[in-house]
Image (cartoon, rainbow, N blue to C red; front, side):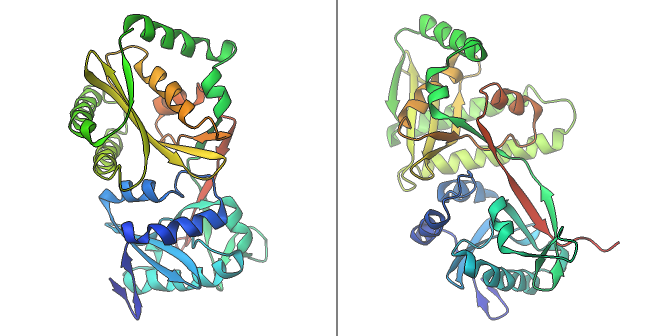
Length: 321
């Protein structure tokens, strides 16, 4: 793909070494700074990249035009120069300059940018851009999720104990390609159950996010081995009733990408989540991503008592007044 004299390359498995090297240098503990996470969620868009000023620059092309999923990933001394070129690429491709945007910007990146005279708005080149707060990631102490100590986790412990009593013959196995067809069947059943319980309001957004999630999970199942994910499968009476995937973002932070269980089995989700956290016992923290702006998901993630929130912002040009 081209924009003016600039060529962008497809964001595929060939990009992984460059992406991983750039992220390792920055050590950002956000779920968005994962090769696997970007690959699976780009099922709804086309991903492209280029190495600019020594920085890995990730673009997405969809109905909103050409945007950046992340800021340029590289040495801070080079990021500002790379960003100027990235903005030029977006402007060359898009019919309107207001389509240019940077999503999932980690807060420390803002230190790289100059500020306007008031010190409030970041500058890219000579232009003033605006910041928009977006939904943060939920990050937990791994030890808290494994131990579930104290009154705050009493309900979780009860749900897990109820599951174990009701299903003493359950088994947990590392996810493998032999589980793929059963996982897809469980995913389809999960989607059907979600459609029967549509939330009040925001139905269109809910359906869009549901379809996005379905496609992302299908892609993760298909690319599980290539992405070198770690996963568990939960079997009850020989039938797969839950599966979960994750990875390590760095030495201290793990990232849970996906978890799906049979809605009708009480405590299965809580049990599978707790057991999966043990896989990452060597990590200090576990990131489970954001809540997509849905109240029910926010309540569930808050109920596990996050130790911190992974803050991120969107950068875009302000619309003319």
